[in-house]
Image (cartoon, rainbow, N blue to C red; front, top):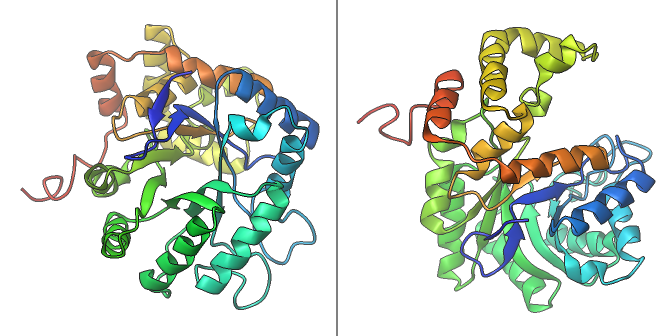
Amino acid sequence: MKYAHLGRSGLRVGRVALGTMNFGDATDEAESFRIMDAAVHAGVNLFDTADVYGGPQTPDMEQGFGVSEEIIGRWLAQGGGRRDKIVLATKLYQPMGPGPNDKYLSAYKIRRAAEASLGRLGTDHIDLYQMHHIDRSTPWEEIWQATEQLVREGKVTYMGSSNFAGWQIATAQNAATARHFMGLVSEQSLYNLTARTIELEVIPALRYYGMGLMPWSPLGGGLLGGVLQKIEGGRRTSPHMQQTVEKYRPQLEAYEKLCADIGEQPANVALAWLLHNPVLSATIVGPRTVDQLTRNLGALDVTLGEDTLAKLDEIWPGPGGEAPEAYAW
């Protein structure tokens, strides 16, 4: 495993992080345990989850709330130094019940959400506590006051964000600086070869404030994992995926041909393309099986040359650079 600092912090995390959204949903507990054991064995140390992971992310479901955290908690309870081997990250924001204060980022919700996650995880601290989305109705003075209290109590070590715009990151960091608080150390964003909008303003903001990028959906929901090869091999796909494949078919054909020409698997090329970005601390993969995790880790051994990077830009063009030059001068 290769490691990098999580943004400007002194914390070092594996360049491939384990996403656990499938735990309790697409992946049962036994296989989830095997995946976590295999991840630790391979040197993966950042485990990423959220209070809503493990089933349909809706507050009116009969089961599924907090299942991913609970599975991780039962895995940690097996002992063997498991808790000390991982950087444990979870999130809050989304509805965890039908009440008016069961969602978003009020101080009331932050306190309750943290205590509930600690209980499900069976631990006394969260290493990286991430806001799953921006809360436009709660002032930063309230958010930071609540999270500072969790840090003072030793229940949270670092704070991160997810799905924030560049200006929202700037607002959050400036408010934290005024309070002499470290603020955010990382941002989870949608980022892959097919979705490059964050290159306009989010990535420049992360670079300026010393925050580490952690892309989610690095394979574009499977689109960049050799989908044409799999369809030709008889793999069935959902109607939505079929429509997406047809939309991007010319690009996918060029992409998978390029991967074949350089002798690398499409998924590993997509992950390696992300990993070459200096702002990125770790890319989050969400394997459903141990075999998928093992294949994803192969991206760490892939080095993309300048010619290959240029060809990837031709196939999957970004927004034209950073703002404002991308659209002005």
